[in-house]
Length: 241
Length: 245
Ligand SMILES: Nc1ncnc2c1ncn2[C@@H]1O[C@H](COP(=O)(O)OP(=O)(O)O)[C@@H](O)[C@H]1O
Ligand SMILES: [Mg+2]
Image 1 (cartoon, chains in turn orange, yellow):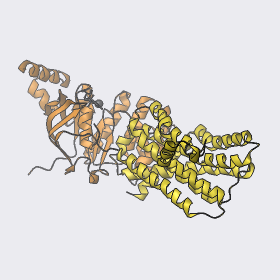
Image 2 (tube, rainbow over the protein chains, first blue to last red):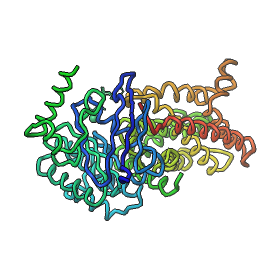
Image 3 (tube, rainbow over the protein chains, first blue to last red):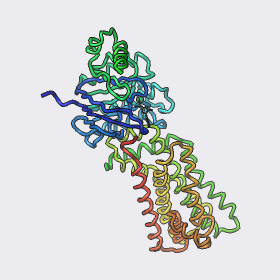
Image 4 (cartoon, rainbow over the protein chains, first blue to last red):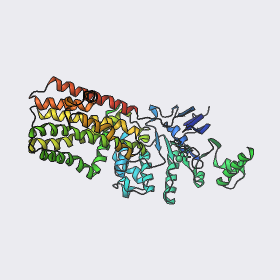
């Protein structure tokens, strides 16, 4: 029997503002892996992620995380969510922000400081979050989730606007967390990060047009890189219509 | 609900408030200054000031709490932190009671400064005890908080939240007996006045002003205000949705 997936989505249907956004998507994410959720802007990545963390009203289908219904009470200490726009308190310092989220999970200020160091914000710990640059806000928001050391970490475009060195470091950390057994779901609209994922979901027009490993995707399409592989898939799909 | 998380939440909200030094200064100083101004205006009629000054002691924390709660909570809703909190172990009641503790503390500090100035320096006089005035002011401030919590669900911008002041707060101030005694208003308006919770805060204060002992009527009036607090808080908590469109 295969191990139970960390995230299982079956026939998920979501409408937003009376328009269909997800039209029946299914997938399974295995524990201890990094899964990339890719798709153009407006394709429904955030909507999918919100359904996984249980903040999105859904029209149909089921979403199960760690064997429990998404967003249910037992999951709230085990799943962490980093929203697309940094959701932190502008009128609190970096340290106070991270310490607050840490405290909600029974973690202390020392652990909060360590999370701040991990995202390279150690020198800015006493700054008010409202006075940070966009990338620094993103990293603070990320630290608020890392401090929890969650079993499932869901990140919505966490590396947008970050400098390449920090991006590289963050991806190393994502890999490290997965190696430690955590399950990561990371959305992105840039393809150059896709190669660092174990598995890729490509979202387009409300459906997954690919759900495979990077290597298999390249092999199946005969493309040299993932960007070309995806283009190939999209053309194929449009040709079929 | 978890007392631990409730207090962590209250601490966070208080810290946000304290980080804003200008707001802290305004919160503490403005009511005392305005009450001093009113006392100077009513220089020739200290017994009128005893009525108006007393009502203002409760009216300021009421307005303050309405404003800061509706705006702070609106920021939580629009800034994404509310959605984030809904994925943490924080319960809706933890959040709402956390708000009540944090802003109730702010209201207590504001009332303490304003009441000290009014009683010690401006000659405000009540027959009843000062602690009863203090208690009524705190419960009234929680009424402002609860209303602010509720209306924040219907505003999408801070500008709109401020526009709710004339809708939810100003009519209550006009009809509670602050500018004119309720029993001398048009009959139908007295009916409206009787339906507004702030009116009962003023009735309770009037009991303290006139009677050396704390009266049963004061407790009844205060209970009506407290009931309105519970009702508005429950309505406000119901607007906090875990799942949204
Ligand atoms: N609050 C909302 N109300 C109505 N429609 C929305 C809302 N948020 C997003 N949408 C729509 O849902 C679709 C998917 O959006 P989203 O999940 O944010 O995409 P992505 O994250 O891939 O950019 C878009 O067409 C967007 O316009
Ligand atoms: Mg998005």
